[in-house]
Image 1 (tube, rainbow, N blue to C red):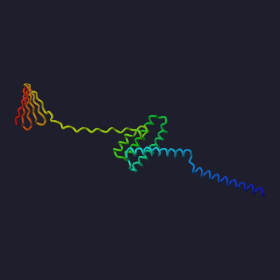
Image 2 (image 1 turned 135 degrees about the horizontal axis):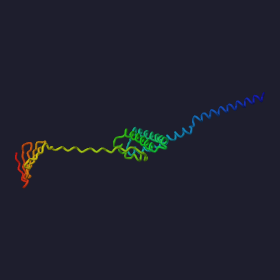
Image 3 (image 1 turned 90 degrees about the vertical axis):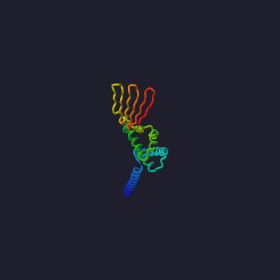
Image 4 (image 1 turned 60 degrees about the vertical axis):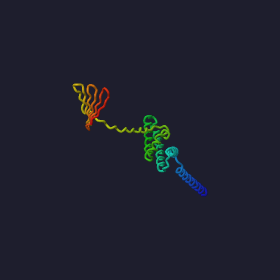
Length: 210
């Protein structure tokens, strides 16, 4: 009888110990991240640290003190780091696809920055992209479009040109001016207001008649 009670007591003690051990194991499993979870947490911390370093440099280069803008750029760079990790895994054997995907990520980051800074700051940013993007590919900013010089006012056009049998030439312009050049080279010009100017080809003498 005593022996039976002793065995029952021992079994109960073992059950309690086993139960307590199971509970502790469950707690440990709940609070201790798995290997995969730990890797993700470490990666996220790396993305955040890299983003913080780069954004600090950008804010300094752009003289940017708008906290909202800095925060937006920071999130953009955090996403950039995360997406670059995805690209690295996806294109391990596809070099062309790898660089195209990197360029797409950087271009998306460009858009994020452009959305929160003015044109001058964005120009400074694009000039420093080799540094911010650590040599990874991106689409170059388009060259500034040169402004066309204003068109010069067009002069009068020739309406009619006549070559006379005697060697004289008569030219009529759209503004009403008429020029006559005789075979000796003398020139007669009649303007639309009626003024006439005659130039002698031999001595250069000019005569004006209203």
